[in-house]
Length: 129
Length: 238
Image (cartoon, rainbow over all chains, first blue to last red):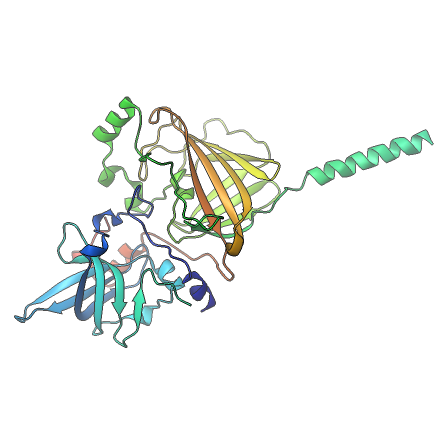
């Protein structure tokens, strides 16, 4: 989609440096690159919506225990411009997600990079051509 | 002959007046905020070393004592930011500007809100209740649109606003180089209750081929949760 490709040329991301310039409270997340965490798991719920989309992922530990993680993204209207669709994710998809963790809640992150079930990768700050 | 000359003078003066009536520029378009300014350099919205916090002692005390985002941030209940913050966001939500003879209408995608700037010289009506966007009037100074806004509703995101808040904007089109024509918005925020002096914020907007406005209803997540039967474990957006 032309619009998405063109917009992909821009680095536009919610910034938490200085005064909060994004809406709602992304100040809950630690956006230092060094703080990023990566999980692999199975999607159990995909909410493609405004104001913030989110994904719930079951991560199975080595001991077999399953922990549900919640990964937040930006709004549907913004994600659509970057090529996201309702069909981008569904329950059962195996995904890898790298995110900025919540300062307080151990299993919540803000999405920075995702490897979809089909192997395609999307980065929040990617310059696409 | 004298009569003919008189008629000619009257005629040309009417033509001159008609030529002054059209606005010097047309701001109509769908404009996306951008952190990259017209010179290709990254820009800051706010002046250096100015946290968007009150600068007077009284203001700071009031802010810290009373301002609680959970309670006071209207955007947590999906109400709009309103002025001045609405024009200063850098997030990826466009603003549509529709310029007509007597007004400029702005539709902001973030929170789906509408702002009207009256160009017909009207005054703020008596008894007009404060609103999120306030009451705005504008006039052209050469190629700049100068807007004054008062009547802004106190409270909201993320900063406290008094009923004395006055916002003055200067909007003009500038050459953005590779980014094409850009819109420059310079805003003076004057709130003597919370700030020791007025200060200037600046934001830039650009256009993209094919960019159109989308629909953004902040409360949709609540509804979606309801439809999915998740009212028991809804994750409140902070």
